[in-house]
View (cartoon, rainbow, N blue to C red):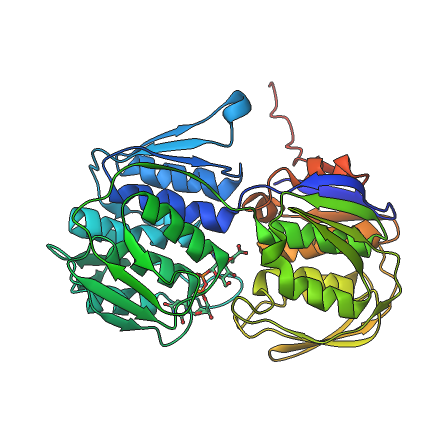
Length: 429
Ligand code: EPZ
């Protein structure tokens, strides 16, 4: 298993370019199931989860061509023939977002068999709302041997009111509704930019959708969809991670191609903390000359403060003067990074869904363990300002969602290298 070795103390200086959004690319790839024609996606990040989704689609009979050379961020998916409407346990267990194929498969093939994802490091994460929504659209659902099977000759439009806001649930049902007969009105939908980006692709494919990006989405089902070409939006979580990194290290960092309109809540919060920044077109320049002030933060659905940036914000809070109360409202167990930050010298107390971070405390390099994608990012940020060397184990979590993070960080002055596990040589080998 790879590890990162990071020596702290260098300010991040220069320009870092933000990649396409993993969480927009995953539903976009699933949307290709809805048509027999090729769907061309640009700005696809080269991260592990995208490779998992490629394997998932290929196992169903899809042709997935990854671009190479200068076109390496382009992917063409053709689902002309789908031989197996199934997402097996082997892939679903490594990536929960595999459940995004449920809606499009049942809409296109009339049947879908998808392994139930189990719990994960950050919470139980059930998919009951995806299932309830599909039932509202007329799918018959059975569940056995760890698999969900959904069947419907043709889905029928209906009214769906989500009990709770769910991002992939909204996306899954949106993809189901576009080929359903008649009109579907979905209420209490997720308003994340990734939902709006998926709708933009579906509209290019011939779908009839209004209101994506707001809490009510109206879909008029069509008989068939066609191929399209679409450019994935920038990754707002990767951008937020670099913005915080620039501030934390006292750097002067230009975060380019980052869709600043998706960062309004983060930037407002950072302004209160005392971080200086300028927005210019598609770039944000961040200057972290401190001092930072503790400011409370609560995660919320978009446009609130993203749960996916909570861990990175906590790393910043360790370097702010005073007590920051961080409340995690989306997932019930998303403070695993806090215990590792404490091992590096942070003063953090967890009380249920609240973490109280008292700063400013010096951080010192230590051996730490990454528990999930964003927790790993938080440890990388802490390591960039820690005294001495930090070794982060299990960085495969970070490889799931950050494209070439160590190269990007090295490019702006960080001392970071990846080391692989050294296996003992076999006798005689
Ligand atoms: C998406 O996950 C993202 N993943 C997550 O990104 C992100 O943390 C999360 O949204 C919240 O913003 C992708 O887009 C691929 P939810 P998702 O359904 O859709 C509960 C990252 O680091 N819920 O919006 O799975 C659920 O348990 C990640 O990139 C139900 O109760 O999250 C949670 O408490 C990890 N029943 C809340 O809703 C359901 O059927 C929100 O989850 C579905 C969800």
